[in-house]
Length: 347
Image (cartoon, rainbow, N blue to C red; front, side):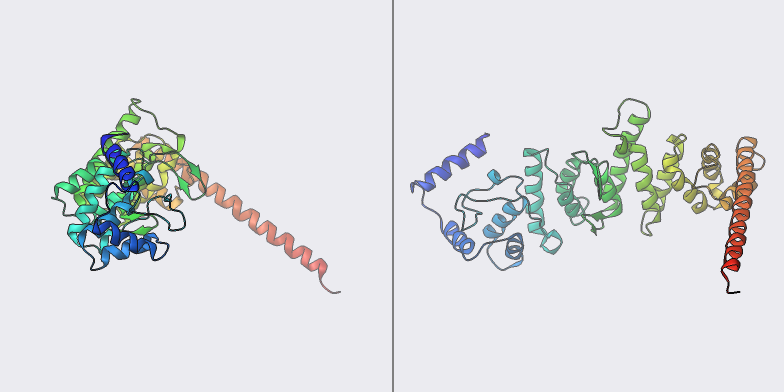
């Protein structure tokens, strides 16, 4: 037990013993709590009401607490259970609050994250980064505490661990809903941090915790989605694509993104980027993501580069043969069905 918690514990015992008399704030807060069984929405309503600042700070402290023991016992309890109860953080609607309260919440999030590094505060940090000015020192402190990777691993229905927080930050998406937008400053900085993680894995200096947490695949998927957002900075989009193309090797899990980017960057100044994408794709020309139209476009554009054109032309011929066979089987099935129907006809 640290000093702060020890002092709070002693104060609680003294208060229970009647040695420390409750303050006026304590009495009014207790009256408010006992009017009915309170929920998170009640605390958020307090934040938007005309009550004095100390009560709003109490509401923030309860809403953002990582654990029950972080809250003074007389600040939150169920009147039916005077031992106090706690069912986890309830969430703060920061976007509705005045900046002073937002900053108070940001300070609390920094404090809670420092005391509970294993607790997930990424969603709150993202909300705050989308509100605080990018030159606010508090925003810097929040970003320093932001984890690009999920704190725990898992792979089940509706959830796969990996670099979800990085994806949320880049796409202004959190907890199933749009947020923000997060300032571009943090997107550029997060991108730099994520690239370093990708490079460490690519060089063998680190390994993903689980096979589904491959950093390059997460980065490529995020870059793909980011490149489709209309407000994404064009220079960052192009830089992300160039990074993926530079560091990627044969990997079928990113072929779809490469095909999309080949078609996306058709300007003359991006011909070298298309060449490098084509060079990666030609080694997996039989990928289910490479359709004939894209393959024919690549073969025509880089017909003078033997290493690209030959495997892609071979794939095109193979695909034509496959298409002819599928067409033959289709008409054969139609003929058989017609014959059966004819036999079934009334004489």
